[in-house]
Length: 269
Image: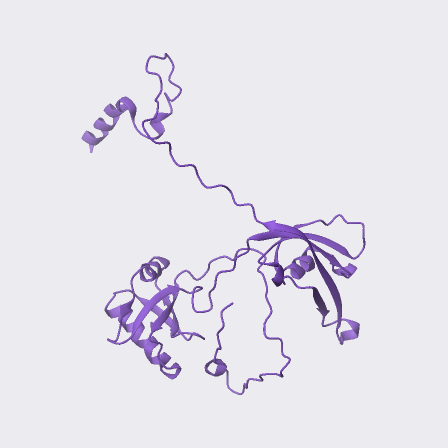
């Protein structure tokens, strides 16, 4: 988790005001995406500036960086946008140009501040999440009308990623799942499933208990073997049949097979 305190004022529309809530407002909830997301913004990057300028100057620095990238680095900047926790988002002409900037060293754009370019999804709120454990879990008192793949997925996202659902269970209200998760401390003891339209439109909820069963670290494959040291025995030249004969052509051209045809083609052109 990244401990960031965003300032919402720059992003409000006219007439909006922020309600901070009471002392018992829930500070955080964790959700796990159901599948790896498609990358649809590969031409975008975020500018990280050091030292960090005052927030009221971020728009000014965003313009300076856009001009620097175009005039000094000679890359086209198609657009720039406000960012909640740094100077701004920028859109390039292509993903190739974006990657060239991201792989470049920090640049001094005004003689005082340096800018580092990072992928749009690797800004200040980006952190590692170590889902190195996998195990079995039991849900009890799961409402029967909601025991389907969508709602089981939804329940598991509160602490991990569903990898298997034992859906053939004759015990009503019980659900067994296998899931990837970070640590036992991140697994909730209970979840509350809400239906805002239930009970005649007034809303209703069901409390579901979660029990951890057995689990362990994910089995990673072993590392690759190192190549053996020293010269390696080759095929027996005295043998009538070479097991590699007829296959080496895929990686080269033994005995210049077909060379005459290439020579004739070159002479014709």
